[in-house]
Amino acid sequence: MSTVFSKIIAGEIPGRFVWADERCVVFSTVAPITDGHMLVVPREEIDQYTDAPDDLLGHLAVVAKTVGRAQQATFGAPRAAVLVAGFEIDHLHLHVLPAWDESSLRFDNARHDVPAEELDAAAERVREALRAAGQGAHVPAALGAPALG
Image 1 (cartoon, helix red, strand yellow):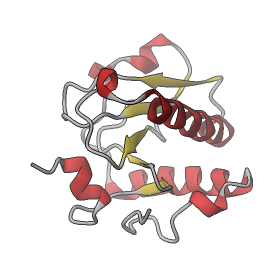
Image 2 (tube, helix red, strand yellow):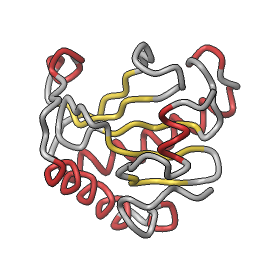
Image 3 (tube, one colour):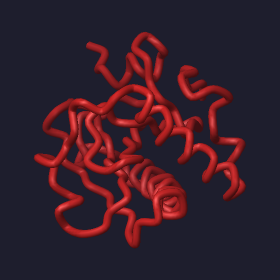
């Protein structure tokens, strides 16, 4: 059975992509804890963090670090945080978000009513920061374009 993330990656469900490579994609969450909150998702459907091969986890961590630096530059956050929970969707994903304090890391602070225009603007800011950091080859041509690998 295909997960909602696989459907986003395939372009069956809209997504706000900021990164795409042969192993993973990064797109905005629809319920951000902070502006610019992104999900790093492997293309392969892997249920949870502890099921993933070590080399894939290493790749996801490097991508999360790259995106985190872009978030810090974009939003002026002192930290980029990475959270792995995975209770909401059975497809491994890393939450990467700009963080100012530990309250920035609580899922109960997620906002479910953010207008699409604000989500688009935050994602575009991260895309611009990734390009400025020399990562343009991994930034999809259009924000909503399905991520080709």
